[in-house]
Amino acid sequence: MVQSIIQDIMKNILTIILVFLGISVFGQELKPYQIYNSKGKKITFEKMINEIQKSDLVLFGEFHDNSIVHWLQLKTIKALANKKPLILGMEMFERDNQELVNEYLKGRLSEEDFEKSARLWNNYKTDYKPIVDFAKENQIEVIASNVPRKYASLIYKQGEEALLDLPEEEKKWIAPLPFPYDATLPAYVKMMEMFKDSDHANPNFPKAQAIKDATMGYSIVSNFKPNSLFVHFNGSYHSNDYEGIYWYVKKYNPEIKIAAITVLEKANIYEISSTEKQLADYIIIVDEDMTKTF
Image (cartoon, rainbow, N blue to C red; front, side, top):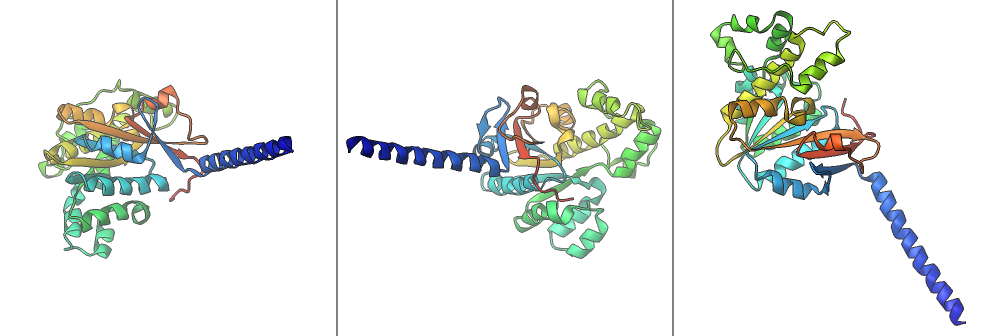
């Protein structure tokens, strides 16, 4: 009799354990992302927010079509807005459209006219409009940080010398010329290697990327204000490995304290390699099956 009771108890305990294990496994399968720090330790979103608020600048690298990352970007600025005055910067807006951005944020330009005039990306409405609208509602400055694309195209086709010949009125949309450039930085070397067998492979190809990085870096430094937190949204390639924008910000102002965030897409969000840990201060690994916005 006693033995039977003990067996029943053991069966019940085993059942409970299996149920909890099932919940744990099932929960892991449904979790869309996991955040890691540069030591490879799993951390919560809240811990990341508490740490990055201590910086002067957050470079939030993204995959442009990843829906969960855009959601996290919005959640990030909402959380940070309660802690410090914010300034936002966006690769998605080019510097010669700054006045349009300003007029829209102040309510002097209609949404329709803004969308017609500002050369917006195709995924603006789904991915960036919520960020801009939050800034508008909370009177947060948004900096159009990117070089106008025609100048990146010009440097690719004709070299930096073509930029030096531009009228002064146009040069103001670009980082000061001649701009610092290190062709040996791994990101630029990798670009040449990736396209070495294509028509893109000429020395000006990575330099066209660099003028974007330099201009975004210069835009950040030029608009940075003490006692505020500047959050910049850009493609992850522009700031991975502490290069690109990060490198240029440090060139223009070594004193700015930067926190870098990047994103990866993987089948297993619970594993991070030693190489991946080195990409940034915070690495968001997103399930590779996450819905894309385009």
